[in-house]
Image (tube, rainbow, N blue to C red):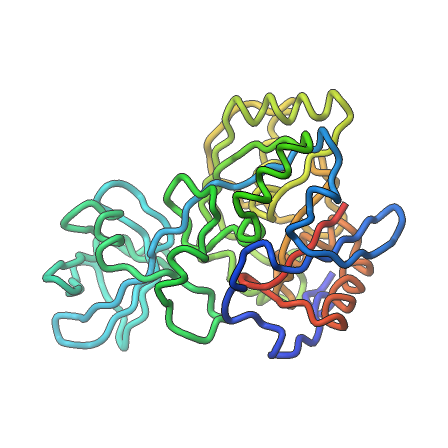
Length: 338
């Protein structure tokens, strides 16, 4: 298939620039592949749309304030977007500057801190920090809002571009399907007998990398690190044995589950990188359902949705969302696909 097969027209006014006042006030478009039926709901009522025994798998990665601003020693402005924390004092970052930086170069930050460029790895720069890298980001970093949000980060983003269950720091983009859950929704799910388990995938900036090749098979997928523990493996096995559904909350949870299933099923605990690319024709091994926001035209995330419910159905789903003025992308509305 070609990337043009995943193109659609999205009115600019449907791209959400801010979150709603309340997380769970977002709208929820449901689609069931067996019945080919849509449903229009409020996310706050999602427990009513699920079955006792369903297992929701959530990504508990925490967004770090990954955007830094600084200057070269010669005075030129520099913008960094951290891609991945390597260790206590080093990270990989995308760097924008008027002239390319080289190994050995230095970047001045606020409060007198200095970064040193250690090496270049393809499009990324390995940077060394004077203090703990996460501490530095907490002091100076900005929330890395996606490129389609046309504003600077604000104080509200520190809370709202983060799931309420975020635990392990490392993502530079939010696992946005989880942004709709609040404490009341989570309590309602548990009260109905719907189970919840967690994995961790640290989302990289590569999630926004466009598909540049005409044939999607020529696209090189970005790599991200994920961890699956014993508790999650047992929960998935219990759900499958009982004939209950496993529903991924977000494409990151789905990609982690399917990556692990390619190595072994029943699942076994692991912690490693994945560059799995899911597009039409993929045979799903774990996931029976997917909660996911509405994605960019020609994106790998839309290709994943097309693999899950079928290409024509996915494009029709997006037509349904647009005709009903659903809000798109990170701070937008969401869908439940089964």
